[in-house]
View 1: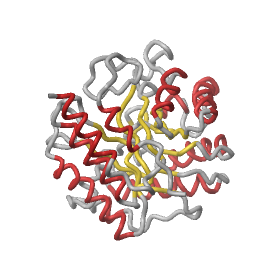
View 2: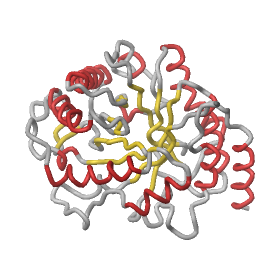
View 3: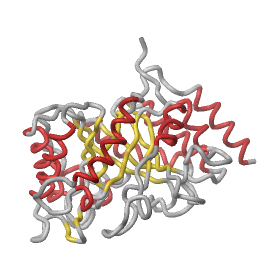
Length: 333
């Protein structure tokens, strides 16, 4: 029954990809965010390996999102980047560039540094600008490097986060970098909740004045399709509900004239999730506001994790077959 559901989803997907569909399509390769602050490279955390990257590129993927820890990249706030850590990251970027793949550097810190929340006395908002200005200088000559400002900012209001993100982007441009920048919202950056109002203004309200003098950014969204959008269970809602969640962000992007990138989403191998994944991919392909996406996730260390899409495991995850029609489809010639 599971195989029938997957095959049906693949057939439906292949007939529903528009000729102009997005070309930044790929995956999160987890591992760089693993472990605590005293973690040892190769034992507690890893970066993407060449065999995995080649397998994903052979599938047709054109971009990987690579989580990294701020504390490892910059062990002391306001100080130089760590040479050993940056050499590891450079090796991934060099290998990806040689394969014609882009790499999103994802600061996977939830707007924190060593447990200090961004905007606190221990972590002033200017620290984020300093980090990104240094990374911008390092990678400004490689347009295959994409800057993901922060993974899922939490414990910070949308207005406070918007101000910090704006300052970080201006720091990137002041450093002479024209790279694509992905700008998330606060409150986990959920697509479904982008315009939801609470005790503070929504992301949709806080980001209305966001601007880029380099005119090369996109808002960065996450969206999972279990009951509460958390991505913590293997179940899926109905395809129509999944599409409705994405449509909240799509409508806002259309109304405000902005672009979006879905840097995290995913489904398990449960049979009912095949149609949900297809519906989500069709929605992204059908709406020109979306630059692309990176599904979650792949890692040699994930084991039987419900969202593991590691391409070298056996059997091959069925979700990869559903992705195939949507991968590396460029504009019509």
